[in-house]
Length: 402
Image (cartoon, rainbow, N blue to C red):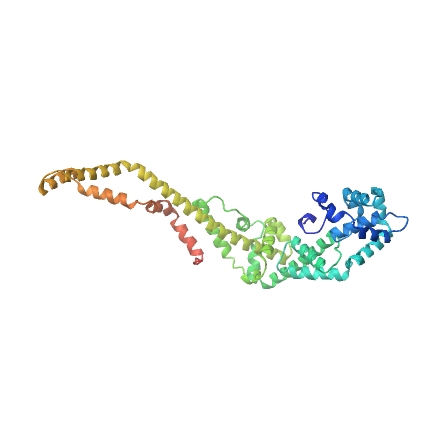
């Protein structure tokens, strides 16, 4: 249940009361004149002033006993009268003079009293908004905005909350009925079978739809692929949730997650099918998201491991690199020594040694990993996932985003 603080319903905020004094609380000469005209001779105008300033600030008439003491004192001091005691405020809230002053304030401010017409208005607004919104806070806020625009007095918060609850419940019941009509008999049987108490496979599948994906291990990746295939194979009619806000499906899914199988079976059919299919629908979407996230994590891990393998390869082959560099330097040195071409060739052959092809092999090996190219190492860390990766790509609809 949302609280008043969750909505835009006006209220006195303790933290800002002191800053609001001059702008909202201090009575103007016109306010004082109005209060004196509409207060009996035997009563102090302070009660009417407190009611007037509260309405100007809130848009409705709170009980004066609920008005913060600092405001009551400020108003009383502004017209130099004693600060009313709590029992005096309580007596005023019960007297008939309060109602007469309330009507006078509404007329003075050009505001219409909350009536059956206003109640019909906020219900109509909520019925319209509930088609695309699910949160009671949103429905209440829209109703408040419409009442303010229509210059209506605001009703009590509880009334707004009850109306929002009733409107949402009515929408839910209509959607539950629609679910029963649109589901095939096979789909209804499928749901009921997987809610059969005592059937181990059914219970495990119901729980599996609520399970978190776990760590991105190869085993968890395979389990997640299997779960996604099961959920995808349910064959939920996409028309069932067409035009339904995601927030509504998420709420139905959350409600289903909070229920065990026995409680789900006791739920009336329309609601039971809606909750179950909402859970499977959201679980399938989450499973797909988890699958992509796990795939990305595995690829990133393999990429990091390949980069580390390249760094390790370079450390291990540093001596080989140094040897090749030294040998090339030796070849350059002997080539520059004086003598004919035959002498130079003999010296080069001696510097190269008996197996020149080994030098070529070493150069080709090192060249393959030049320029931070760690991709030749990556297959080592992905080959165990080869089958799973193909399974994932088979299930995904991959397309370019540009």
